[in-house]
Image (cartoon, rainbow, N blue to C red; front, side):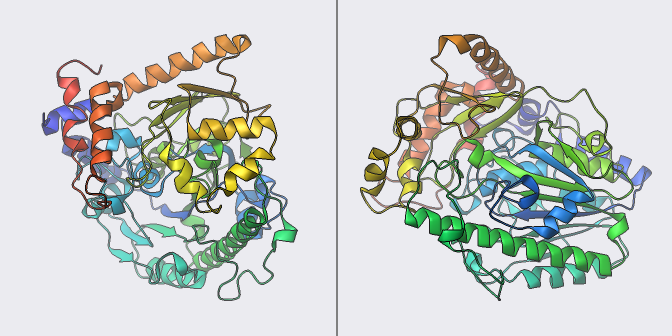
Length: 505
């Protein structure tokens, strides 16, 4: 059943038409103009592995300096650990099940509607110059009106961070309008490139590092990958330093709100394409000259759904009604109290190879993972492992590992319905407490919170029929024995059909 425009907007945002709430925000922005420029910086596929976050193996002096004169968030999360879904939440302020971008744009997955409000459209119509350096990676790209869009040549193999700084400087200097510029870096996406354009000047080797602790395993290949991942982080830092130096040269640094974040966690075992901390926890640093309490470290639970409300607040626009996030401005100013108790993430699929839907909630200490296909083999297990191990190698490595590590990988391969972790005692999520009777109270608390969030945000997979149909769509991409990358997905037409029948409330 295909729902009409009015039904969709009510089901996802509680509004009647997209144009109504978009125009209200724009009218407010026009009535109360603020000349704050917005520089949004994203890096690819990295967790908070920066020296300002306490990582012992990499030096990131430029991002450290940004944090020192700004605000560093120690508990920042994406909505889903994949490039397109994560970016869709940054752009729209919605969870991926609300906007529709539940997997990679390059595999045909897309937002439900082109007219879903987004930061580029709202700011452009409010008089801002809008630009993106690098990828948008959300469908349809025509939903994001830009004055300039520079696409990097050479794909993920190009790590010329000087180009980003030069290109950004040209855009920033070209107009007297306030600007919204998003700069996207390829680091630290795979392949983990040791050195390019003489950056880093002194690359790390496998003897200089230890494997990221959330992996729980150690092999020469993993150590080499870890070293080069850190080399990517070092080169990223150099690029951000060049970019911020360029901004200063334009004379606009004092009127620019700078937001830096990773688009999701590292492409490692138990990282990207999972709901573990290694996938969803990111670095987030904000510098807002004259509007912040400097050198702060905030430990509140914050999400990328908070970025759109923050940006709208910075330019003086009325908040878009129905968004699940909140402006981070009070935290940046140093205010205390009244923040969220629970934080939520989700997972659907990345490409069509790894459908394994999950929903998660965490409070200040504990985290609950709900696996919607519990008891089935997670196709993402082999998809990721094959990047780091030869056939049969991981089984050999796991045999030599402690029992709790073996059990963690068993859960990664075939998950139970619930996983519960004590993030204070077990930050790498190696010990599932869901079946421990002494944790029954916290398990029930988080189950209730998660169920309430799914109802409030109109999660379409509350309907078992929608889950079954989506699984069938994924499976159909392999019917001929060959993977269909660009099949026309049907889920935007049936995800919310159940609500009109009363199945989702």
